[in-house]
Length: 137
Image (cartoon, rainbow, N blue to C red; front, side):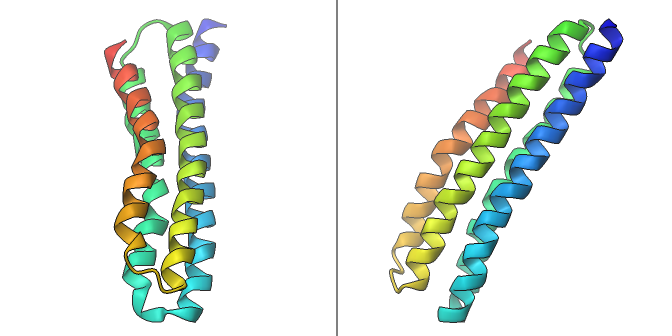
């Protein structure tokens, strides 16, 4: 039973972080598609903002490898679940922030790009904290 719990924790950290990144990049990507119709010359800015939520999937991938080295299956489950959830929610919310920035840029507010990057780092911070905590256990 403990072994199953450990493998479930590994699966959760990878799956939840990946699901969050997929949803977050889709949210921002949909906004980018709309922005391309108004201002196609800003496609580079849209691409950067749409790709930001993908980083949480990478954090889940790294946490997966960190957790594999742990010997306590219950700890692997707990950490895997918590880091996976944090990464998932962080990526979704970051996608929403980035989507709003993309809409602003498409409406002619060119200075919004850097400000959006700054705001997008705020939800990312919690995913980074989760990854750091998984390395500390």
